[in-house]
Image (cartoon, rainbow, N blue to C red; front, side, top):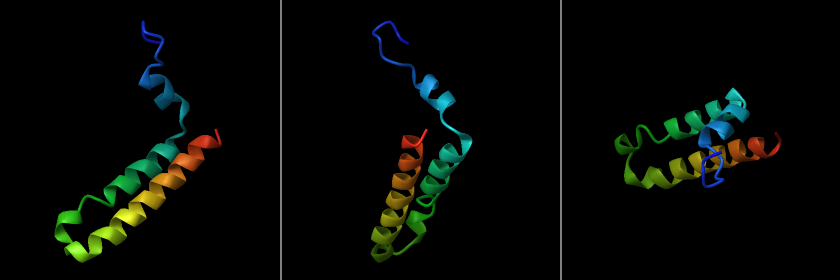
Length: 63
């Protein structure tokens, strides 16, 4: 912990399984080519990334 009793982010990173982190990385990769898509497809892509991040967050809750 830090001197102000706030847990270090590294403590949380070490506690999470690699598959959860991989799911987050994979979800965020869905935004990498967003600028190549027509604007009308952005909402669908954001929705897909949001769903993937929500699933990764749910996996963290099961630890």
